[in-house]
Length: 190
Image 1 (cartoon, helix red, strand yellow):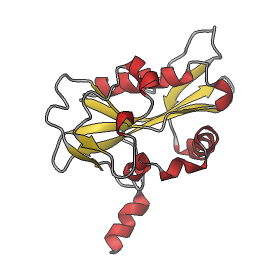
Image 2 (image 1 turned 60 degrees about the horizontal axis):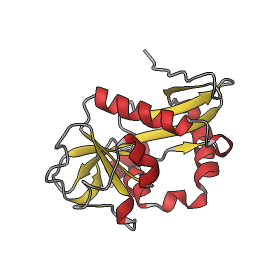
Image 3 (image 1 turned 45 degrees about the horizontal axis):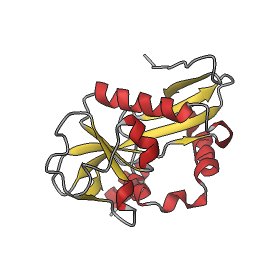
Image 4 (image 1 turned 135 degrees about the vertical axis):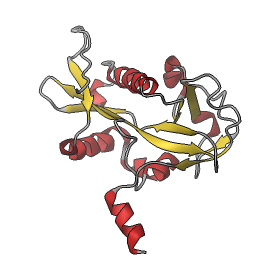
């Protein structure tokens, strides 16, 4: 059963669904429009490169015509060399002309709800505390963690879905998710 969330008629109508393979080109075009050409150089991208999103954690928002107007994905990571597993959220993007329509907030609520429902313990992201703080994210539990590459420490935020999930977590955040078929083939050939 596919989950769809329909929001208030006071806002432009949209639904949130699971991303499909047919959505990839539209999602990538949206990310380019919303985040610009430098998006693939971010340290978060190093954790996503060659990996698939965590199982069941690629969502899109569609307008009434079915066009993709928002996207969010979450990725499996490990906190440090042998630390706990968590999810890394991002990128979150919304069609620039619809930035104040509540799409980003709805995608965030949906992703957090699904992560909690499926038993995940914590979500991390690199972003603006004033925006993500409204969903419970803060830098309070990330002081002993680091991203693999340049980043602004105060922008590494976390949300514990289970109290104490980040107790003792330290070190560099590492990719832990499923590899894309292309990445797996390259490693097998080596």
